[in-house]
Length: 396
Ligand code: PMP
Ligand code: GLU
Image: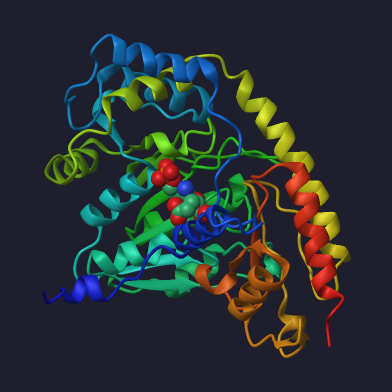
């Protein structure tokens, strides 16, 4: 069969592809330590699982409204109010099958054929592909270690053209853990409002903050709220990646358009998962803090060890669960007898010769970085970094 040009233009998500490869190697008996995918290693808290079991036993196993059950949308409104000082009604909320799905829907309804969509780099792997799938053109705004991996309002203003319709912002960031301050967000919002550029603000790592505070982009002022779709979800905060629940909050007409689209593509997110997410958001929040404290310990350990390795230079990321070292010094050298020609080549060598999985920076739109996820146990982090240190002894 002839594949469409659209299908031919995209490949698999590099993070998910690496995860599949790592899991396959582990199944085959190869002892690989994964710093690849961003997936909390903690189990979903028991009270959340129990809510799902109850839903099944009560026969809550049928279609729900496409945009999600009213109780969950109300709980999301309460969350937005409590955590972000954002006033929304259920008509402003869409529940999707993961935050990824909410972002996809938002891009589809906010980006026309030929529109330019501004994406700060390093970016999460799926943003540019989603823009391509909507017929838009990603315009990448670079940022580096010297600005803490953040773009500025001035940079944004320079990149805006009459074709710019949308910006995709991510705070805290995957892959760098950078967090935008209120002041930085206010300036960015000023530029977006002035040029009538809509914003998708992906705030899925909101609960994973070790220094500083999370500020919702839509909450910086009333004008910002009018132009923003805020996306969040339960995957990272409640260790619920497999349940597939994410959500969006925004102007009612945009949410309605997203819901219409979703109603033709996937209908509602799984009814049972919606009940579980409701318990996650409305139930006890203690497990969340316990996970955050553990992540912080791991982050500190990983940053310290990585900075001791030859050729590795990294900031202490204030949020999310990734460390993003610069490894440009290693490019052109030899490791385990192999030429390090790029960050991807280095990631391949690390998988083959150190048996650790990491994602190369090129997947996130920068060259000369690796992404290490520390969403894995302290023992594995220690062992994985020992392996890295060992392979670095072969450096020529
Ligand atoms: N946004 C970012 C920045 C992410 O890292 C992820 C990865 N899981 C998602 C969105 C999607 O999360 P999910 O679909 O599991 O809710
Ligand atoms: N977002 C996670 C990551 O970056 C999960 C993989 C994905 O959804 O792409 O590793």
